Image 1 (tube, helix red, strand yellow):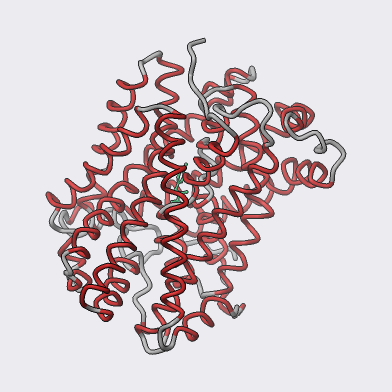
Image 2 (image 1 turned 180 degrees about the horizontal axis):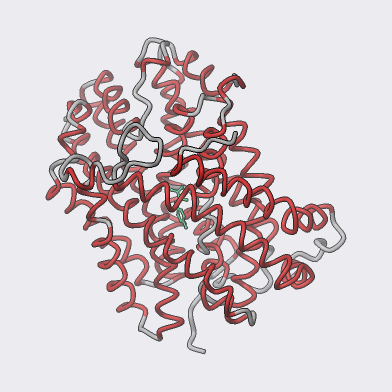
Length: 463
Ligand code: PFF
């Protein structure tokens, strides 16, 4: 086999995987889901998903990747279960779909760096027209995709690992400074209360489904991204502790992003949290207004820092999203890495064009589909989001753990996990993981997957 490269150290892997996890999902997605889904009640359910159900999925993905040293499709073949490679293929499809719309949003965020630097805070009111300027935002998207492709083309340790090691610490420093700043503002406590004090009367079926989709998306699970990254991990690295660290880092940064945003919103709405725009546009509309109200050079600096941070976070995620199909093309079709990267990146950019057009520019893609029982049509970008995040990822996660426990078999998984983790066998973690991977996760994820599909696409609400 050709040398596929790999991470140069355990820390390099952790940084890259945490970089994959921490992205738009944490800073853009998490706060808006919290806003829509009833504040702290959503946060509680989200945390339960991350630690109880998603952590076992993460450990399993990394173990399968390291065992086989393959992309998600090759991994199933390599273990001798070719029919199961459909799960890997589904993962690659999810990666392509997610990156196609993720890159559009990353492009918007990139444009906002320039707007903030120019002190153009009015962009908040003009967001709806901003996204209509498809040649401008399309070029930003193209630039973002090209940057992603450039990093991936440099390979694992020279590109992905290096970028993550530089970008992750910078991100954390920037985010913490904004948290401190937001705490100093008037009415910040009203925002914090909304975010941290749960009101369980807000808890509905869709809050639970959204929390599940958000947990999978945020932790980059269910599509084999961590099978792929796991394939570059050293035999002696400890998967159990690495996965724990990645989960903690991701959840921690989402929680801190909330600590930054909700006090700002409290300030903006003078404590009336229900007045805030809570859709996906949250950070593109509400935040620039806040930066504008700071005004002057300081407002411009804070705004520029924020959107730069968002783009950093997005880049280490787009890199992992692109790496999944690229690893497949390199391993299975024998294409050279550099060539594979550029072909796949251009292809995905093209797949993303309807998501770019579906925000008002093209009526067809803006009112793309009306789900059974829905009052309004869903735009193309949201449709992709529902298909990939809320549906394919939890299904993928469910099938991956089911496969590992019942087809590949638990003792093989345990064997792989104990490499690099001498105290694993016989530990409480082993017992919990065995239970979660064999029964809890496949069952809960399987049932919730069916409920989510029925509720989202067919208007049938069971809970
Ligand atoms: N976890 C990323 C985020 O929260 O923005 C998005 C993502 C990256 C999802 C990689 C899936 C993936 F494989």
